[in-house]
Length: 474
Image (cartoon, rainbow, N blue to C red; front, side, top):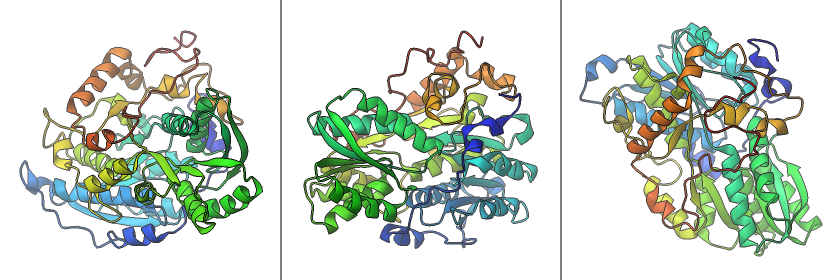
C-alpha cells in the first residue's frame, strides 16, 4: 500500500454507487415529516440556556438519500437535535445513484450559509472528496457508515472541519442476528441469504458476521443467495423466485431490514406462513412487521438512524461552538439493541414512535457545549478500534482485490495513534459507559437476547488485543 493513499481502500477498487433502497409507503410517510428534495423550510431555533444568542444564527444541513428510510430517519434526528440545541436546521435529499449530485450539494454549503453538514453518503468512494469539499468552505461535517480502511477524520488536510465518522457494529449485527435465527431453527435446516451490494464495505462486513455464525452451526445449509442492492422491491422479486425454486427453505436472512421487508411482503403475497425472515438495522417498517406477529418477520439488530443523526448534529454543533473532542472520538461505533419478540418491537414503537415522528432523544443533554462535564448519551458508544477493524485477520480479508497494509499507513496522524492507545481508549469508553442513560433498556428487557450489540463478535487469533498495535507493526 503506497504512503498516504487512501484511495487504495477497497471502496476505491470496487464500483460502488448506491445503497439503492426503493420507495415504500414508509418512505412517503417520512418525507412528509421533513424537507423533501431540495432545501427544506428548516426549523426556527428554539434553544435557550447557555449562550443561546451566540448559536441562534448558525445553520445545519442534513443530507439524505431519497427513498432510503434509514437515512431519512437520520435527517429527521439531526434536524430535531439542531432545533433543540438552539440553531437553524434544513434538509436536502439526493438520488443515491447520483454521486455528483451529492457532491454538488456539498459544494454549495458555504454559499448557502451553512455552518454544519451531516450526511449518510451513498457512495463511500467519494468520501474523501466530499469531506475535503466541505472543509475547504469552513463547514463542520460528519458522516456515517463509510467504513473506509484508514480514512482518519483528523488528518490535517481536513483543516479541523471533519468532525468524524459514525458506524454501526456491522459484523456484530449480522453475527448475532444469524445466531438467533439458527437457534430458532433448532440448529438445522435450509436457508436463503439475500445480500446488499457486492463490493460495498457494509455488505462485506455483514456477510462476514453471517459466515462467522454459520461456521458454528454445521446443520444450517445456505441453499441459495442473491444480491439485491439493498433494494426492497428487488428483494421481494428475488424472494418470490427463490422460495418457489427452493421449497425446502425454512428461513430468509436479509442483510438489512429493507431486504427483510421486501422478503416478508413477497411471502405474504404468496400466503406463506412457515418461513422466518430476519433483517438488520431496526427500520420502522420491519419493526412493525415483527410487531405484527404473523410468523414471518422474526428479529433484527436495531441501529436507530434517527439516534445517529442526533449524535452527528450534536458533535458538529459542539465543534462549531468551540468544543474540542479527543482525536480518538473522531471515529465512533454506536451499539444496537436486539429485537426478537413482538413485545420488544412494540416497546420500540412506544419509545420512539413510528415513521415521521420526531425523535425523543435529549440532544442538549448530549452536548458538551451545554454540558461540558455531565453530558449524557442514550445508548452504548465506543471509540473505533482501527486494529480490530482494519489490521490483517479481520473482516477486510473478505474483500476482493484488497490487501491489508503491512504497516500503519503514513496518512494516519500521530495524534490519532497516540489517542487510540489502550489507556486513553479505555478511558474514553469508560466515560461513554458512565454517560449511558440506557434509553433502550425497556426494549432490551423484552427481547430474548438482552446484551448490547457492540464489539462482541469472536475474532481470529491474528487480531490483537483491543486498541493494540499488531506486534509486527510496532
